Image: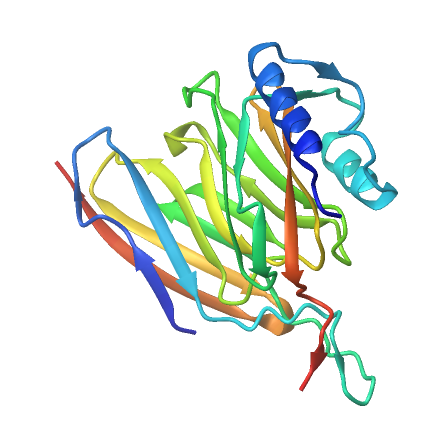
Length: 155
Length: 105
């Protein structure tokens, strides 16, 4: 789905607003397919997921979905009593909704993880962070993929 | 089996250092088919662990959506001189280890 200028601007505006005033949402971001939703619920349980704190660096347009660089960072101190426990990354349209779970601790110093992922289609990627007080924070990013990964034929 | 590890050789006590790891693995998703229509069985790394002088500082559960030759970068606080040990575990009994040492002053 090509993103129009209007959609882009409203999305960018939404991100800015969410950055200043965290919006409490009881459900994951809107229009999430059932599989993504249940994968998120498997990790989060019934806890509310708030928007904010988490930053997902991923190219908005990728030519090859077989290797997409991705960095997740969480704006949270890493002290003995206030730290990021784990970071979970999900996708919307790959055959499987999970991408990776990353477990950190107070000795991590900085809540940031980078890896390279596969994307089978143009879709949304969601990153969720679990803090030491068991609150959950999320962010979503849309990625346009021109060459899909995962399901192609083996030559 | 080959792994590339990037850990600073020296650090000041209390510094936050970045650790980068790359290992060679096909990460076959289990969702691909051959031209004949047979499913290619899944063969991925499912777990990665990093220990610093024996204590676990980072662990990752990996899924087929991680690209081939998994690359992981993460951070830790340099506390004392010693050794980082890395372990990758995967399907079909796959296991691989690597290590790197650091001098903290």
